[in-house]
Amino acid sequence: MERIIVGVDVGCRKHRVAVGTPDGRIAEEFNILHEKDGFDRFFQRLDFYRSSFGLPVVVAMEGCNGYASPLDQQVQEYGYTLLNVNNLKLCRFKEIFPSPAKTDAIDARKIVELARLQPLLPQAKKVLQEIHEVPEAHRILKRLTRRRRELVEAKKRIMNRMQKDLQAVSPGLNDLVERKDGSVFLRFLTCRPDLRQLARMRRQGLLKIRGLGEKFADKVQFWQQKAWFSQEVDYVGPMIIEDAQEILHLKERIKALEEQIEQITSQSRLSQVIGSIPGFGLTCTAELTAEIGTIDRFENERSLAFYLGVAPLDKSSGATVGVRPSKHVNTRAKAALVTAVAHHARQVEESARYYHKKRGEGKRHNQAVRSLARHMVRVLWAMIKRDCFYEVRNSEQMERQED
Image (cartoon, rainbow, N blue to C red; front, side, top):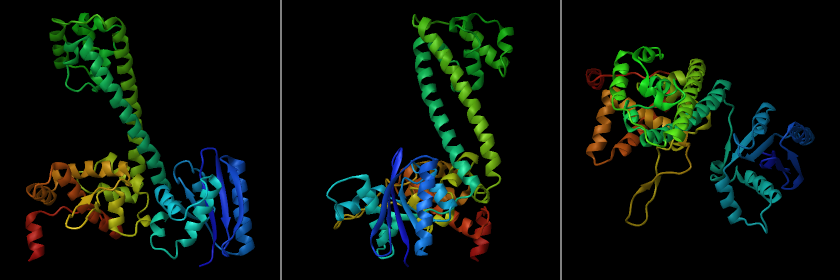
């Protein structure tokens, strides 16, 4: 099928564009700035070639959902076919068909050459993947879940730092609770401007702290009897209080994001299907929905499993037979899937048997969970394709079905 191929080498502030015609020529090359005027010029040229040749236009670019945003989204809104270029495999292509130098202009032309080969070479389909339209709810979820994950990681870093400082300044205060990220403990740390004042607080003042009950007050008063602070408390104490205040603020922001995520997740059919699996909580369901986007982008369940990081690659040579994990996976989706499957194995009898079977074969815990995750991808694929929810069957029901 004849078509106009547009290759875009994406940069941070400007992009290099090469337009290839069906006769094999590069009709035009130009730069566009990453701003409204540059985008307008880009689509004006595309409209010109589509009307002049009367052929469909295909845009192949690097960095979709990255530096290419929002240009990649606008390409789909204008109705053009969008192909995402795998940077690593493009590099391998340029090694096979080398150029005299490495410039943005050469890269844009190489993208055009690679896109021309797509109908002829089966491997080119893996290098150039068509970007399908994603529901707006899933795009919003992707932003929210990634933002939430960043805040959780930030909270974890600050928590580790605060706990280390507490151990150095007041070991007894650090041992007061097991979980240092509890809101009650954080409010207790921040209720006075000086940590040493906590050792002199009366019970009446303690009970005024929101969420602090009688049992926690008893623990605090027992600690007060032998409270001790190192000399570093003069300058490290304010740091601990500042960190505790920041963690409280992060917890509030994470909670607000989770409320938004819950509201949007309820509007997604894909989320409802994934969330029907026991053990798949709100956060993991939302992350999987956001990262998958649309099931139409996957040819089969194996490609989905590969994307989720639970389909190992063959690594055999001679008499040696083995597998290796792929590095080119969606790490966020993989983490969400493995976490959800670990919870799932505790709630569903059949999955628990599968997990223990793998453990009996000598696999470690993580390996057994990944094996179960691979099986769950098959189940998930069938559920999405059939648009049905997960059904839990006990042993008696399965025996009746077999009979």
